[in-house]
Image (tube, rainbow, N blue to C red; front, top):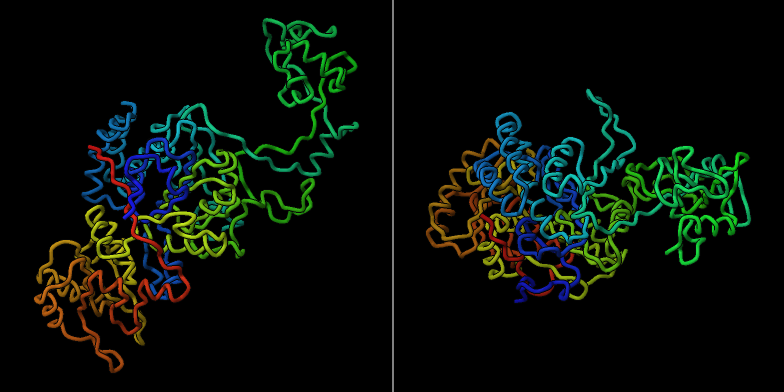
Length: 593
């Protein structure tokens, strides 16, 4: 068994890594300063669902009102305890005491009035603290969110990364229009918050072409080198030294200004002006024909068109603008155009265009540096990093996401698992499942429900014995099997409890129940299940209470329902790639108080 997390530099191992699991657990096992760029598109506090991709990959039905992996942020006892511990955790991560006290005040202000928001902030803050730890000193972080929560997240990022390290709030136009009749203006944008780890960071933003009308209006002059406009050679304010001394009979100080040679002119200077005095640079530029004197003797310089306008903080695709830009037939901001039926679309509800990620990655990393996405989803950041020759690390809590990424990496980019990248955290055997359970019981529960073909249902998950549901069509409508998962020691009492849960859930169209266990069931459990009787449908009898071990599910022995469940093995027969190689465990968690 290959453990990728034994304390040495993982960059010398597999350059690219894909993890299945909770990103907090994964980050706690990563090295300090290991990544150069973090892009995250976390779940918003907005009830978005992943039903679409579930249906696409499993072929199983799910009610429209169901909310898989929903952003149902409940302030339960566990989150309240996390909130109580937050001040100690912040101190452990080296946060300023001001942020600690702010957090205490925030909890008092939000608790009881905005519990859902507070639960969301608890979830995100724990992860942002860990992201700062694994980010390189010269690294950057881009957090993608919607306006409903961006201002709250910005406050926490100011406290964790430092307000002085806030760089930009990028507005991305995510749709063309929003015609829903509401008591608000149509919401068509997302917010991307850009912070850095320090004042020294990688940053070389790309450029967008000028519009033809702008060029015609502003760059009216032309010489042998091309079009240009006239611009000032001085800056506001007086300066001591040579920058304030007259040159060619023009005194900038007399007008409360000083000589300011722009960086764009250094290409016309010997050795790019290195070691040259201000007047020497002006002489050289005049000799090169780059200075023009106005009728009143004021020197100006020829500002060339250049390659375009450096990226601004508003990224908004403008349909119907083909032919408007210089030297291209593309429309304005076409590279960050929202996904609207293109071949790029994978059916993932929150998928972002690859051009959007390319802008971010190109602007804030160099080739060979590491891009990390803790909420990988369908893998857009991974594909962008690969095409730009960056290393990448991605993780997601949903096995469906891992399968999509693996499938796309092979079919679109020719990348083979265990040859070009590694996959970790996905159990391929009972031993691997046991390790996952011992390491992260909640993730084990999540994985095994998905393995059974079930639907991890956050509204019911962990609620009165229900860890998930499996849906099937009948002539009288959509029915479901309630699922319960146990990873530890077993007892017939667990099966009796599930039987009681099933009776209680009959009004919620639950006709059968499934018990999933890591260990093999006992005879007493099997007898309790048999005593639950049968569910009759169209002349076929189905055990009303069924038991499957992890070993059963790994072998493809699915639950029996009127619409036979497609297990992980069945998905692979549909063309979804099987997992390769041996199970690789996820990182060992760092201990925090």
